Length: 75
Image 1 (cartoon, one colour):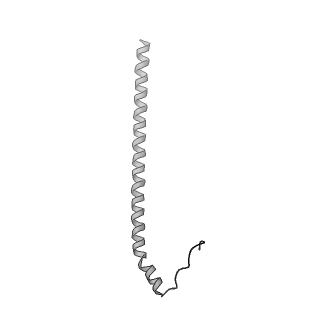
Image 2: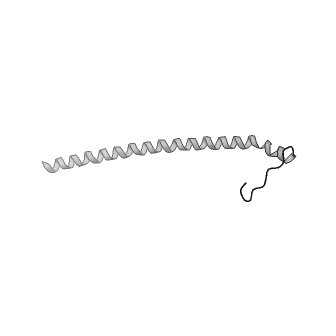
Image 3: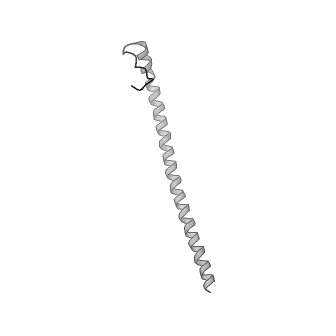
């Protein structure tokens, strides 16, 4: 146990029954949080992919612009 924690109530007591009654609610909350985190992770992956694509497009435009400018200077 960690400092500040209290030991669980003995099995078969009313306090233990109340603690177990909340296990279902706690598990449901945990499942919802995990689902939200997974959705957030996917959004981050999608956002990163989109930013990478935009960066590549900007790089392509930059190189294209430079090639046009150098052609104009050469002529």
